[in-house]
Image (cartoon, rainbow, N blue to C red; front, side):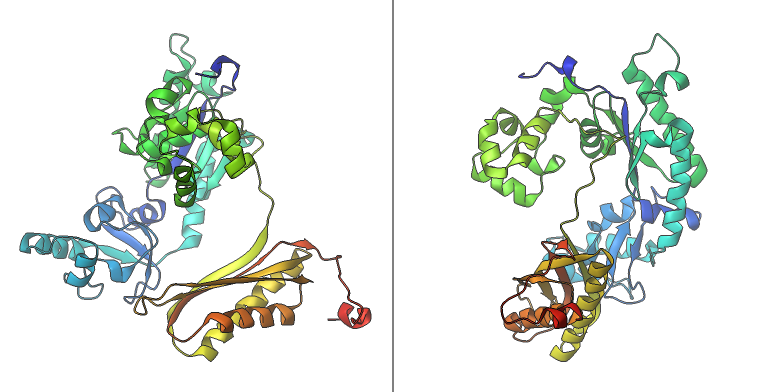
Length: 420
């Protein structure tokens, strides 16, 4: 190893994830066990065009569907609960009689409910109160509505004072108490990734081991870098590496986390910039982020996207939605006292069209004018659209600058521009 880990930061970190949070909240509301109930939370759950926002573990296991997928991809019809052979074949599922009977049986027992965000936020607040039973507010960093880091370094010996136990054993015992308290207060089961080193290793422990353990807890530390971090099956199993980054790494001959750790840092910096060096350090298990001082990235743009309630076939209707969205995002731009220098749009066709999505952008002079931005958005759309049913659109304004910036040409009237 290249590093002396005794010189690296050591903290007792728990990364807590609520198991299938939205779906679990709905199961608890209905008095059902989240781990044994087939349930999914779906937008527009009254028809067959909804989006699966969350699902229980049983639902995922039986139907092979992850969150954020379409209801028409389910292997059963949403209304009749009969087997959908078209969707099944598309997913490569079997169509033998025994499988069809099993799917239809589970479909009849599956609950499909609409989302209730206010209720989920309320449950999250109850969970945050549980966290504060074990750590000070400054030691807690909510990562999302269903995940959060807790630095237990200061409170570990207070709750588990037994001097005969190692810090790793104490961290596991205290995390078990946290799991129990969350369940007692909310009925929600939680999974916890642990580390006596840093937040990165706690997150990796959660994603790659804790979710598969019977007690839903796992601890990774510096000693586990070679045996666990370097043995991850896929590059995308690593925190911070998505499909696009994976392809870029493979392009320069890196196909595993071990190869990433053993690569020359100059090569990674040349390909990825500063982020390449961060990937290299992370591959060695080194993470200097601090739960008490989390990194907040600077906003690089403002945007919005929307899945339309049904297929839009008429161009005028599509442009009306684009214009409204362009105006909404322009309002947010002015509230932040910013101007944009880049307008980009995207439009996804309905599944029945089978056409690639529209993506285009245009550089413009700094502006926050609704008229200029709306006209630019429509001009971009018209330059690419040649007909067909649209189901999702998005508008994004990037390369933001302060609203005080104003560019003039020799032919502009500054007074008129200032009053736009």
